[in-house]
Amino acid sequence: MQRKQMSGTTKRDPRYWRNLRIFGLVSLLAGLLFAWCVALPLDRANAMTHPPRLAVCCVTPGDRGIVYEDVTFTTADGVALSGWYIPSRNRAAVMVLHGLSGNRLSRLDAAMTLAEQGYGVLVFDLRAHGASGGDTVSFGAQDALAALAFLQQRAGVDPNRIGALGLSLGAVVITNAAAQTDGISAVVLEGLGQGAFEDFPPPDDVREVLMTPYRWVVYQTLIWRRVSPAPMVDVIGDLSPRPILLISGAGGSLERRSVRRYYAAAGEPKTLWEIPEADHAGTWLARPDEFADKIVAFFDQALLVNR
Image (cartoon, rainbow, N blue to C red):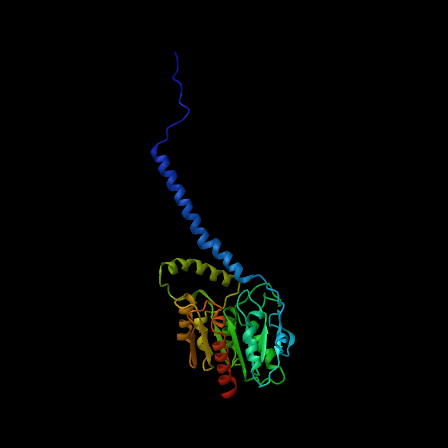
C-alpha cells in the first residue's frame, strides 16, 4: 500500500502566530521599559558622578594682568582641591564654583570681573573635576565649606565679607554650604540645578510625565551612592536673611520653572533675574556686560555697603 507523501511544511494554527506577535510586542515593550526606567537612568547617574575631566589649560588670570596664587586646600573628608586665589583689595572675597563636567576656566570671566573690582577671588575645581582630587562628584557642602575656611584665613579678608557665586552643580554645592553656616554672607546662584528628585517641578506636559520615572531612578541612585543631599527647595529658605540673586536662562524650560520654584521657597532678601534667550549655563554669554554689572552691584551692596 502506497503512503501519501508528507508535505515539507506544517500548517500552523493561527493562534500560534497571534501569540508569537503578542510575545514579541510584550518583549519589545519590556525592553524599552527596562531601558528607560533602569539602564538609561543608571548610565546617567554614573555620568553625573564620574564626569570626564577637562584639563586646566591654557589660560590663567596672569594672562589678564591679574596677580594670583596657585593654591591647594583640603576638605573635611580629605579631598585636595586645586585652584587660583586672587588677593583682596577691598577686604571682601568671593568663591566661584563651576558646573558639572566643567572646571575653574568655565567661570574665569566672572572671577576676573570681580577681581578687577578689588574682590579677593577663589576660583577652583570641584572634586572629581580639573586638577582636584577625588573620583566621585558630591552635591554636598564639603567643597564650599573648605573654600570658606580657606578664605577666612586669608590676610586682608574680613571673615564677615565672604560671598559665593555658583553655576548649576556649583550652585547646589553653595546652597548646601550656606544652609549649614552663616559664614557665606551673600550668594549668586546661576542655573541652580536639582539636588534631589523633589526639586523637579510638577510635570506640565506628556514629555515631563514620561521623564518622571527616569528622573526618580537617577536621583534615587545618587542617594544610594551618597552623592545627593537634601532637596534644594527644602534648604534654600535657610539662607535668609542673607541676600540671594537667582539667575535662570532657557525661558519656558525646566530650568526656568525650577528656579522660579526655588525663588518662591527662598526667604528675603531675594532677587530673580531671568534671561529667556539663554540656554543652561549660557547666561553669561547671552548678556556678558549686564551679567558683570549685576554681580558686581549685588556683591557691592551685600559685602561692602551693608557691612
